[in-house]
Image 1 (cartoon, rainbow, N blue to C red):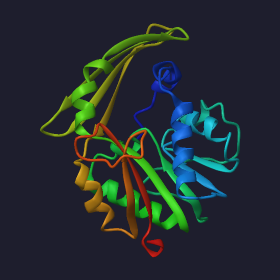
Image 2 (cartoon, rainbow, N blue to C red; image 1 turned 135 degrees about the horizontal axis):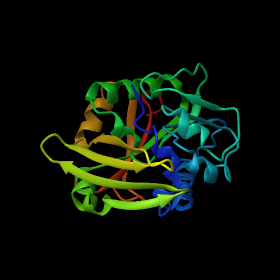
Image 3 (tube, rainbow, N blue to C red; image 1 turned 90 degrees about the vertical axis):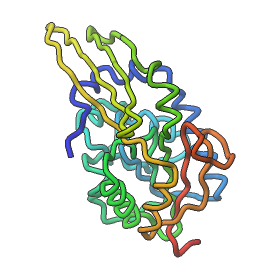
Image 4 (tube, helix red, strand yellow; image 1 turned 120 degrees about the vertical axis):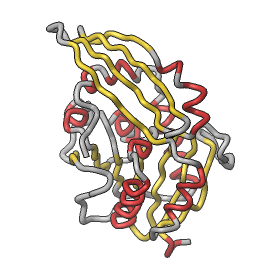
Length: 242
């Protein structure tokens, strides 16, 4: 796989400046406490520029960070030697983790069911017997409601960018195209695609693995999720624990 974040890392923090990462990290911490989990080692998949882990470090000290984009990991303010460039579908770890996190619809970047299934199976290999895997995904109502709001312009560190967002309900692909003007005047383009799977598809695919869903919440809450939600939070564990 090839990371779409070739130039976007140059202005990613500016692009995401309105995201409440602290509140998001607090929500994840609440989930961890809810299940009385005391993780000794945490793995964040698709960690990007590691902003989430910057806030999670208030609660946990041993966090391993992985992402397909070397540039995104290099731009992180988190300073540790636990950053690894890898795909979610091919995790290089031999050790087990008590908690595995995939935040901000990272799994939606896996564009085929086979890729998504491979990622789930990879997680099952690195999740400890008493561990929890939690991830959020974007559903169709999120794309329908918010696609037009994601069409925007910005400027950061002398770099200008224009984001155009669209959703194709037939292919269920949400596409974000970035037109990027660098300081030297060179204009480049990046296309980021996400697959908006049906809500029940996650249940179907996880049933083909050694993982099992124990809860699924409407995002930022502990209320039961459904297909009508915009974003949902899955709580998954190994079948031996259930």
